[in-house]
Image (cartoon, rainbow, N blue to C red; front, side, top):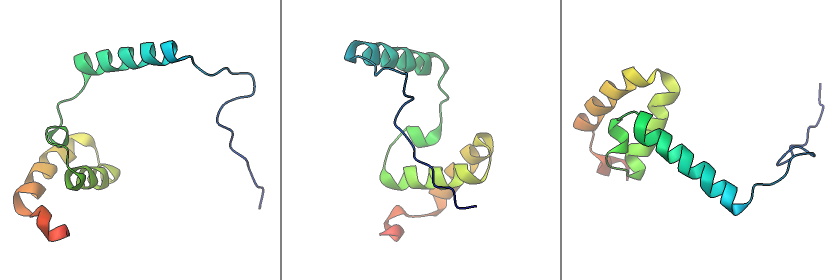
Length: 83
């Protein structure tokens, strides 16, 4: 089955958001995160190394398990070893 599909950025009948609507949506998302966002160790100090490690680990298992293993990993591995 070699059916080629084309992805469109939005449905034909939908309308793009205005700048004001986009800002209002962003404000709601940030407010939600401020009240309900989880305190995760990889968010404390954003570096390319920490982001990469957390992304790889999160693909493999649940967030709760990654949280403890992420800290252990960083204690035992030097980011300079990755280049």
